[in-house]
Image (cartoon, rainbow, N blue to C red; front, side, top):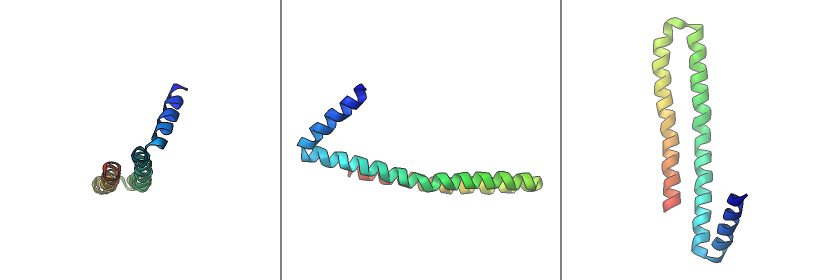
Length: 94
């Protein structure tokens, strides 16, 4: 409950100062942007690992090649999440 009271007090103080209100809105917008930026890579990673496990279970002899391709796909997908994080930082501190 103390945390809610602190948030309410900060929100009331931010309403009095336009610069603080702008910073609060920028932080909220940046948080939403990063949340949306992680949705796609999160879903993609689940699909990548799920399909790789399924293909290794169906054809164990090709597990080495599938594993290599899986890790490459995961690395490229994680790069998208990192780009979203950079956009979050730029929105927050710009």
